[in-house]
Length: 261
Ligand SMILES: C[C@](O)(CO)[C@H](O)COP(=O)(O)OP(=O)(O)OC[C@H]1O[C@@H](n2ccc(N)nc2=O)[C@H](O)[C@@H]1O
Ligand SMILES: Nc1ncnc2c1ncn2[C@@H]1O[C@H](COP(=O)(O)OP(=O)(O)OP(=O)(O)O)[C@@H](O)[C@H]1O
Image (cartoon, rainbow, N blue to C red; front, top):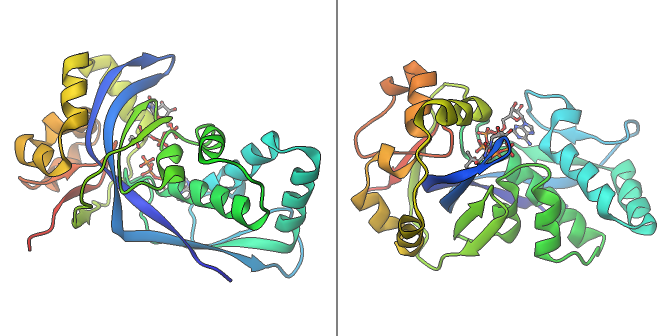
């Protein structure tokens, strides 16, 4: 059975530009991490459940982003396509070799969901465009659209649904994930309550044009990521893991830097 790679991402920078109901509007440079990915495949099932995920997960199937992607996909398909998807998932489970740590700011769950949507689109010849898959994906998680498009590097805005390719070399990144389980909503909520300071349109345009390597040369970890300070405040132990010259991904807990050559 064909293996599909679901890559991790880091946020080279992540700046808040405003709010949208309980969400935050962002401008962020997402970069794919070439060396870190889960592997997904369809595997024939013995019998049984309607939907089966085989892999090491700390959550129930119904909470899994892959299952949520399945439900979101069923909602947009016509009757015939929905029947063929249900038929596929009655015969095959989704096997996942999980390597991307969870609660880590690396988008692992979102990447699995995006990869699953693309697998279904391919195997069942659903004919959905990347824009259509992305519209399904955003219902599952804010990071899913980036993984649908599959760019090495992109400027991501809105709450995550606007993905514009940024042409640059993929950096060779070293990622370190401390043993701290971070809740993304908790960090965003603390940001809104105590650190809210959206950047203006000029700064957005400047950041969008700047190469990732230059961002990392010019900015400190807390300048590059608006969620770093609230994460440090909410999870005091995080500062024990921070090393000068490292950057913070998403809402954490992962740090990264460009590998020495
Ligand atoms: C931190 C990032 O990973 C950076 O890439 C994303 O902004 C968050 O992506 P995610 O974990 O896929 O987010 P979701 O699962 O959609 O949302 C989890 C929670 O994070 C908060 N959230 C998320 C995205 C966003 N732009 N603003 C938010 O305030 C909301 O409280 C939301 O209920
Ligand atoms: N496919 C999945 N892979 C990993 N965790 C998942 C998945 N689906 C749901 N979860 C649950 O989601 C939570 C963490 O999700 P995820 O692995 O996406 O981490 P994250 O670091 O929060 O991602 P992000 O970069 O979006 O902040 C955990 O509660 C985990 O049990």
